[in-house]
Length: 253
Image (cartoon, rainbow, N blue to C red; front, side):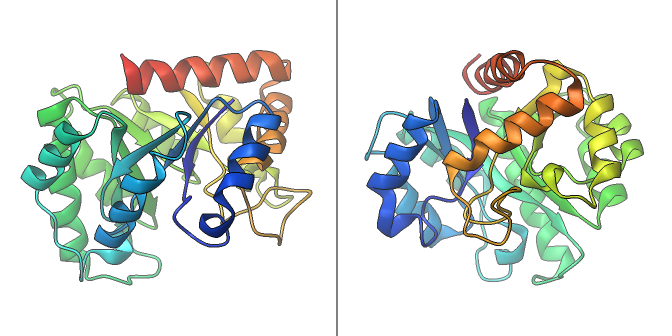
């Protein structure tokens, strides 16, 4: 298994990192991708990826942080070129639910990340909440440029998913698919092609059932994989094999 999106620089994971890594290996996780959300986050991640060969990182500014963390595509490109274990750009995107940052700032930041992704042929990890039309319209402007798109913790509509498939996007399932009230989302993941799906914990957030309400960690991806296998009506081993192959194809080809 591969946890395609976790935040190892957040507590309580950071202060217990050695045990988090140990438990991850015990359940069969082969790679962890820890995600940058700000400049301070990226500084921590540069150290975390040296803790174990299984850990990789990204560089990016979360849409919530775009007011205080301005970023340029050139800065992203330089840091990607300086470290072979930084393999993704993000998380970036648009969040018009909380509006923790000005919308225009979010859009400008999103486009800088996109430009860096195109310059480096590096996957773009996208957060989108209450911004389906805006997110798609921006991405669609680059539809002929082979942008590598990963929709992180996808909770969007089936129609949104259909439109994103025209851009060759990948979709990551989080613990939300295990929640009782996520029937529409489960139907969307049932619809999505198996070769376009990854799995993630988004830990320490969104712990899956039966650990909902607890602090999440990568080892809980076991429950997400099982639920997604049930949704797709395939064996858990087949689900794990496919999502692992999809991750490696996206990030290492």
